[in-house]
Length: 343
Image (cartoon, rainbow, N blue to C red):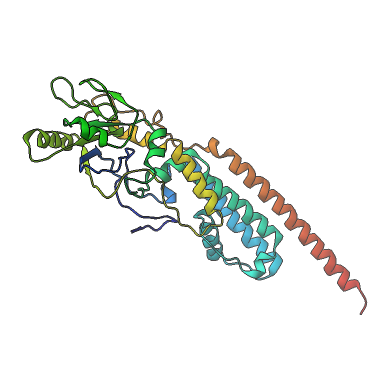
């Protein structure tokens, strides 16, 4: 169990990878391309441009100061600025918080805080750059190999490769893990021999290939294992499978269900396939020029991308200022009428 100082708590059982494996009854040696999860990043390290953070910081300070002034004029007992900072920060991180009862009665403060919460929700969950950062930095739960495999493999294009020869009866006993391939030895089978005529391993779409080696202790299987390890493949344990199940989201936010649904939808749309493509480009076998980060989907968010957020924020502050002014005027009128009323 790994605990992080954000709103995520993640169980890490196996390194993240996009290649599933089937339930193994024949004690194969499974090798998949190793994808090491990247280090955790806090919310303040998401891929935004500096202008975005400057504008967001100004909005944060403006909301805090406006809330302080509103509560000072309306309640005579304002919420202190450190308390307001904690409240707005907790909203950004989707953590639970409590507003003082006296301040919660202020309609202007409630409008300001509601607009800020809406902006924080959009900032942290609705944009692709944020989702990529959240999803790619969160290792996944491992599942048992026989859980939800058939449904997964029908929706993803991967191949299962056999590197050692098996008897026909052994092949028939294997589960139907994929559509039949044409074997170079002739006939249809559920697995494919991924060796060329010179008995060299054929590497195609490496990050989505599962290599199976049957038998051990003989010169040929041991040579194949060594070659796979040198190429960046890792041995897959028998009791876990890298079937992608999505990050385990634990948060005190009232929007937990919506956030989880959004994360799962992004996961299904191919975020991790993108991560696998990046891993292949960064692999040792890549000899071309460095990849363009913008072409890979890692362009930093610009200030124009957040224009809707700031428009909503500006309208909210303007409306709350109008409500606040109207409340002060009504209060002054009522106070004047009270003084004019004879006792």
